[in-house]
Image (cartoon, rainbow, N blue to C red; front, side, top):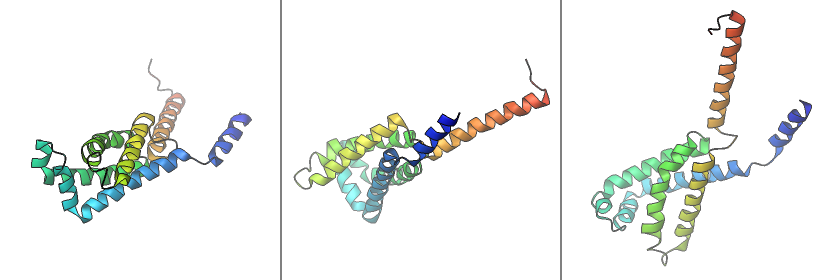
Amino acid sequence: MVKTIIAEKQGARKFNWFLVLRVILGLILIYKATTFIRNATVAQTLIERTGIGFFSKNADTFSLMVTSLSMLCGAFIVAGLLTRIASIIQIPILLVAVFFINMRNVGEGGFELLLSIFTLFLLFLFAVKGSGKPSFDNYFRRGAVIDEKNKEESELHDGSIKI
């Protein structure tokens, strides 16, 4: 009992790299969304450059979708709320960005390609691992467990257990 309390206290003092990476990922997504909001033609032009007919014909619609999803998913990832779902939603967007946009423009700026690959790696990481301990996902999960325990205890005290 005492050892587990001590272990929990020591774990609370450790620096959480997973949290830092999650916040960095969310801020990258929010930053890219704000750059697309400030200059919507950049997003449309990038989508038209993919060379995929369906994307090129509907570039204005896709630029709005990419911008909105990046802003929303970035905010969710920073908060640790529905992190896996937000990451899975962003993975196809980043795959298109890496393979159809940034690979063709490597000569213009390698930084965008590296940033996209790093972001894609982090998205895969959080899609598999989840949001980690300091997150709203974990907070709500713990709250549900506590509510379930309280419900069971109240049923035991009331004598209303049905067998």
